[in-house]
Length: 336
Figure 1 (tube, rainbow, N blue to C red):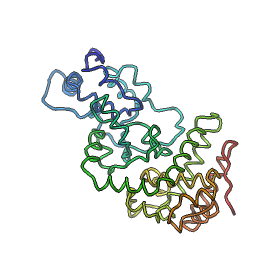
Figure 2: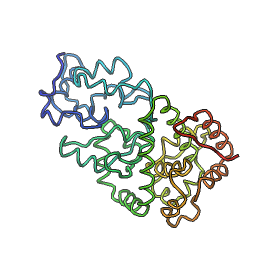
Figure 3: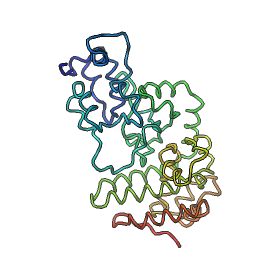
Figure 4: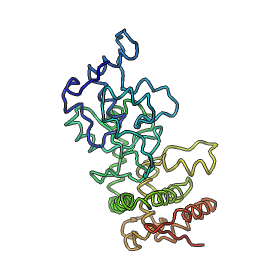
């Protein structure tokens, strides 16, 4: 079949990939154009045009196990998308080296309501951005706001942009909880957002160090977000809950998965204390932004002590990982 060109798919501006938009979001939007629907219907049943409407260009792969619809990682997907998106497929190829860990598809749920509102004026449809799945970026990189979190069963739908937009406007209680939290902990979150920006600068630096920097930050966040750690005693965490772990989950599995399942609010708190142990946030600033949370750590030694008390095995695991990934750009020393 001849390649579809943007000029044949409705308005050129509406069909174009919005800045930073994820592949799954763009494929959902493109599937709303009649020309693309005709292409999909003909492809699904050669020679026969049915009355079925497809949610996304990627709907044919929905039954694939562990499929991630934000990347092009095999030839069949590439060949399916090229007639529609042309050379744009290159920016969605799986990178040879993943510098920043990405939240797996099944846990995708974070979004920035300001970005969605801005995109609507251009695309006339809600969008999702790729950066909202970056583990180290719980804040919108454009607006500096703490990302919101929809339920996971909403975020991982093929029509995720529409489903999240609908959930956002039909769940006023959840949205008000987010707004209350960000207002109450505004100073704390500003400090955490500065840590995010500093990490982003480090990850754009010397290629010889970036993987070690990334692995160091990831190890610190995993230890801080380990179920049972002090972060989960925080009042705000109970209002903005994470995805619950399985009843029979082992400590090793929880340690690796919780950083992906954590809400944006919990990841932001973890980033704050990463900044504390790295010496980027000083004790005076900690005291100024901690509010009435009397039991929160007030120094790097308090953070290390909290990790040890939560689980000494996690502390030992963290020490081993930090030793492996020590580098000139980022050095961390744990007390004995």
